[in-house]
Image 1 (cartoon, one colour):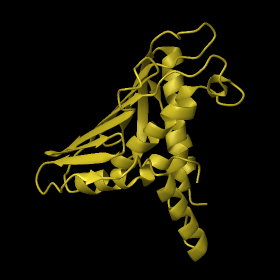
Image 2 (cartoon, rainbow, N blue to C red):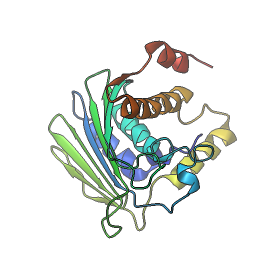
Image 3 (tube, helix red, strand yellow):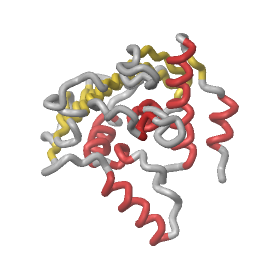
Image 4 (tube, rainbow, N blue to C red):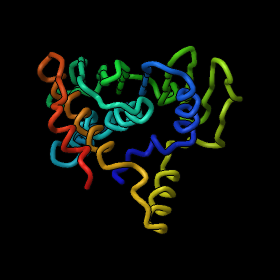
Length: 216
């Protein structure tokens, strides 16, 4: 378990279950109004936080992979210039493509206003759509759409992740998330940084992905 908690949120699980009833590739849109961090924050320190792509955008790369359930194959990315000299980019638009043709569009920004809810995820597949509104309400559209799923507070999956981990430890079962899923999410996140620096599409190494997926 590495802390990719949003895949364990009841909102994610409800959205995923509804979309699984439709066929074809998935289109995912994640918008993150992350807000600014203080100058010199550990988040942007290369030795501790790395930067906000590797430390924060990674959660939404993993969330998209959880919803799509296919291997990522390539990434394109563009970013705004850093607000402060010497800082890494914090405002990024990235497109992750998957082996089945699914696409995830990820928009991460530090330039918004905190009065705007932090996170909004929209997903579309085969005549169905879901909208996760800041992990407090999830709405469903299309055939068989259930009622709005609400939680009393923000539920980004922290409790669900711990519960899944403890249950696996207590029963001796396999880890709730395969190692390969976390590894491929990490490789795709690193590819975002590569594409941003190179100014061109970054292809994921199929051999590296295969090594991640080998049984351990």
